[in-house]
View 1 (cartoon, rainbow, N blue to C red):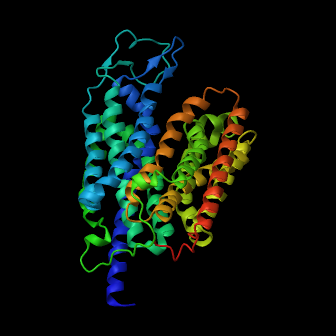
View 2: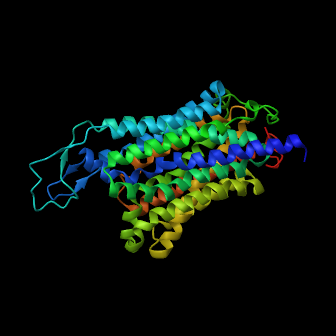
View 3: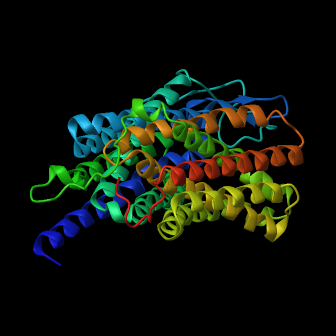
Length: 437
């Protein structure tokens, strides 16, 4: 190996390691469930029914804002990194996450409600509070600003990794998005520990400082090859589609809709994992199921794109879409240990989509504009997160709901089969190790 090639690999490896570490912090977007109860009580953003059952739906909605603006951040970050570079895009995104947490910490605490302070029938934890500030502030600071910042930095890291290793896009994409998924395993218990020992606003302040420190320490390592002296930019073969050009192709809609249908199962079951476990005979395992799901999710982010390096992108995508469909059908009846296995498969496949679709985007539309193009494909992810929980949760019959979700995944697999046929006819179905368009 020549000295220039060794330097190239060394520089790329630094980007990959730095990106993976920073992704561990950015993945906190998926840890909102552990914040819901302490945030609701501290700020007074919940309602209580006559039988003292608390409704935390207002604060739970923060997750929807986060996912929505995560995708918008990906799309914006893709455009921004072509203007100011990946390094500054990551810096901007990371500091936005830190600022969002700090602003959340500064929201006024809810006032004690004297009417309920001495009620002996109250089953809620801690005193009841009346909100001192509108709940929209948590949507704005943590959901919108934080989610947008995560999306910007996430996209820049994934795009940089792909451009440093164009012949190993599956592997390097898997590494950085796996790190993002592992954040749940690390930060969920950490946040719970902080909340047990400090008020939740103090937890936000601590996390804000940690995120700012991590961003400022790491961002300078995230660079595109063309931004490093003596580093050669990837050879761009084939047409390099702009986002506008991509939107004119049927392949874009096949990719986006297949992503939308494939992720729908996870978005339906994820908020109700504990409830599902209790109802299906594994109540003792309910708490651990969330962490177990996070591990399966992370493994899917690494495993699926690496599999695609061996058998092809579309083939790997078809496989995980069909496994998702089988998982959805299995959820109609699975109980006990079988339920754990089925949920693990669904979570693995959901993680797999996060690892596969950045690579599918670059291989179908080129590496040059992969940041902004991937953001446009992620619109399918956003629509899935917003629409399916609203529409399908109106169906009370669980069996019917899971059959519909399974059918959607099958449709997604069919769309990718069509995509594969189109690419084969266009003469673009080459070995992933040789592709660098």
